[in-house]
Amino acid sequence: MAISDAEGESPAAAKEVGGERKRKRLAERSLLAKWKTEGERKSYSSKLIEALRVVRRSSCPAPRAVRVAADRALAVTARGRSRWSRAILSRRTLKLRSRARVARLKPPAAAAGPRAAERRKPPALEQKARVLGRLVPGCRKLPLATLLEEATDYIAALEMQVRAMSAVAEILSAAAGGGRSSSVAAEPM
Amino acid sequence: MSSRRSRVSEEEINELISKLQSLLPEARRRGGGRASAAKLLKETCNYIRSLNREVDDLSGRLSALMATMDHNSAEAEIIRSLLRQ
Image (cartoon, rainbow over all chains, first blue to last red; front, side):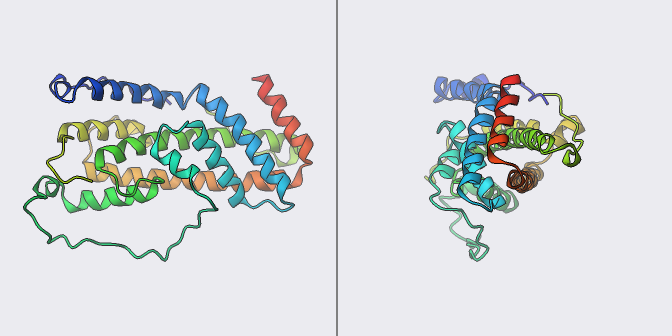
């Protein structure tokens, strides 16, 4: 699973705030690739330790608790570089997905003057961006560009989490005795 | 969030969107013709939701596995396989 590394820098945009933004973008790309390599192993081990501690603490481990531990370990691996990871780490208790939240819909017929630049975005796009903001931890009120950056990082991290947890599940089910092993074909990484 | 004319141009957003597109599995299969931004956002949301679901399933599987295993041997097994890699 290779991330396409298309060099798409526009020299015109670089003239602006310029060098710093360009550098940041290049750095981001290599950060994404990190989720596939060294970062993977580190999250792997720290997550295992976390999950095992969860098991030890309770005689009846809930999947929710394992998820929380896995997420925390994932966020720690991100080393505070991203908003979503910081948001996960600052969750003090088990985050309950409360559906009781009232959807805050801004009436679209607001002032069209000073907001002209943002009104260029069709409402459909805005609405989807809002949904995305709710899905990525701690990214509810971000401007679209930042939100997209966070989302790409979050997706890469989640993919790694899935790979690592699957591997652990394989190990444990193999160890638990042949009868329980499921034949999941290992993805070439 | 300031409402002044944002420095982030359409261009930058398009770039981020194509970066996002390269991450989505469907885009890879399709061979990457540029889809509309709205469609991409929707696919992104769906992808994140399905990844979350996978992690939840795996969490369930792991907690069940660990419940049936002796803690020490579980840890030993994991460490052994880590060392093997």
